Image 1 (cartoon, rainbow, N blue to C red):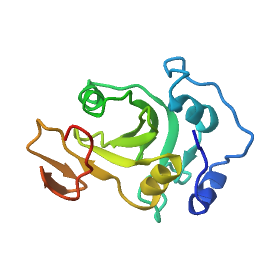
Image 2: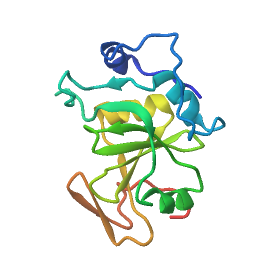
Image 3: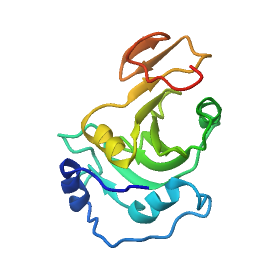
Image 4: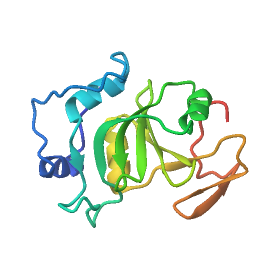
Length: 168
């Protein structure tokens, strides 16, 4: 897995104390054959985009605290089926109000924590980190949902702003 980050994001990794070479222990629930393993081995314990009070830096959209996060409440189960992948929680985001998941194909998805809404954050580490820090993830909707609210905006099936995934 390519774990490079953009020049734009590099300063936030430096502020968090990230330096290469770096390798930390990975939680035993993370499968060795999943890309989450190498990501957490390199970035586990690093928290980017937050100040000393653990609040999101003013110029950023989210902070990212890299750590294994176990799925809770069965919220991820339907998404794993719809996306036909394993989703492993690799970070808590937005002042720990959301979770960042990594799929087998290196797609990143975020769960908002306050609702059952999911968003596509990017394909690959560089893209996902930049989208989380500087932009916004694309909302997703399940077939069983009539609508989904994402960052205060209501989306319904057929909306061009929704992330399209196979089976939708």
